[in-house]
Length: 231
Image (cartoon, rainbow, N blue to C red; front, top):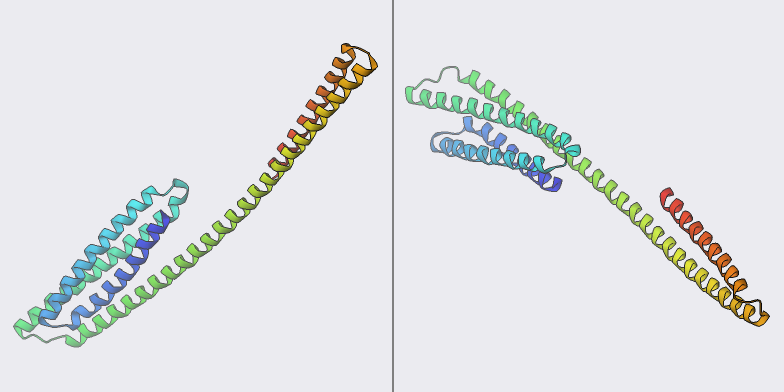
């Protein structure tokens, strides 16, 4: 789920960088070129809003314990979106003023307008640079998280393999103990019949062997329990 969110993040970063560049070009264009650029920016802003909606849906699906970081990033993206819309609004106002001046033949204050546009473009470049740095930082953090997850999975796999080996050894020991106890019972039975001591003696020895087997069995179980608990 977080991989989908990060994919939307990358698309949003690329799209907002393109929007910033196009907003800076609007005051420099004339006539139909300006109209076409304004239309393109409006379309891209709508795409950016749709990406934010998709990102919000992804955040809602993230578990609560991991949602805080993504919510904080969403707030910064919304603020960035608001700045882009404000910049575009100012650019459109300047565009309308320039069209009006062209129609009225008013070229006054052109140098001041150029300086204002230059400052706006400088600010946009700085914001784009900060967005790229933030995107790079996110990519680095994502890579680190992925490496940690792989290391944890590798450690868990080793623990599972060790537990399986211990269980196999325990199973083999239980089988060996069972065969030994069965052989002891058979030998005692044959010895009792040869000695003529009767069935009472055989039963007593069998009871002792069964008790011994139970003690061995519980000893093995306790060893398994403490071994698994320690891991």
